[in-house]
Length: 357
Image 1 (cartoon, rainbow, N blue to C red):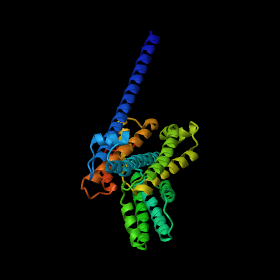
Image 2: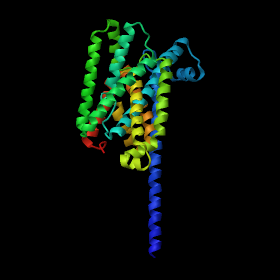
Image 3: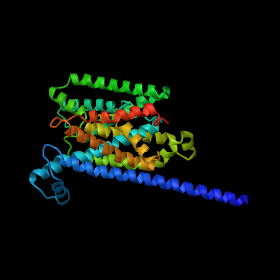
Image 4: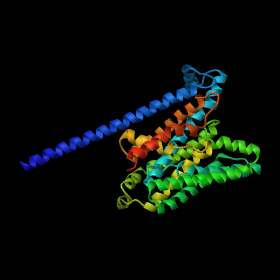
């Protein structure tokens, strides 16, 4: 009799387990479908809207058949499509960078902008832009990304050193803000001695914007972000183990030292790519991973990583549309818009404490 009861209990538990898994898979699938649909809609709105209105039919012919007036083809293929693709890639890169930093520091408010990592990248990029321009050296995408990576890595190392002494979340946040202020102060000091033309270029770039993107930028971003995404997906199992605790990850054979170096390197590289091409962009790295995990109802890296990539891209594309159109022909800098939507999410995380576990 007892054996029959045990079998019945096991059957109920198994059916309940399978039902829960089915609900989670369904929920994740729905989120991905919504994000893909949102990407398609926002892409059309991005191409459709602006100083020159282009109908949906003309967009379809230009994109899929390469047919249309010379003016429309030039606007779509030279100006708007590169901007859309770069905003998608860099938005996803920011969200992934934030997810890696949150995993590394075990802190939900860790992000490349809040922790001063973007400011460190900005500082070194400013140095390179000023020095190279004054010496008559051409500034390339490789030199900008390399400079931003060095700055991001230096700021990350500084925050890492501080985090060893400070375990309090609020204190770590303040330390990151202070690092950002220091880097911004050094940047402003350097700009004081720059040429007027350099100051204008640096000011536009430092405000954050996806405007002026070219297919060369698209190619470089695609390589850097694509390789970063593949490597992060390859680390999804160790990340999942690390989320359960460092000792648990070690018990499963994860090389903690190598793993931590990989997380810092990849997060710095992604943040550097964003800063090099679009300038510092705020709050995306914190808000998007929190929203994606909440929408999917899981923290499993295997689904959260592609979710962050897609969610961050859609988030930045929406913000870019608003930045372009809200006060057209005047264009807002992208950080202004991302802060308007991202900062309330961070405040909600702090107040509700849902994201602080």
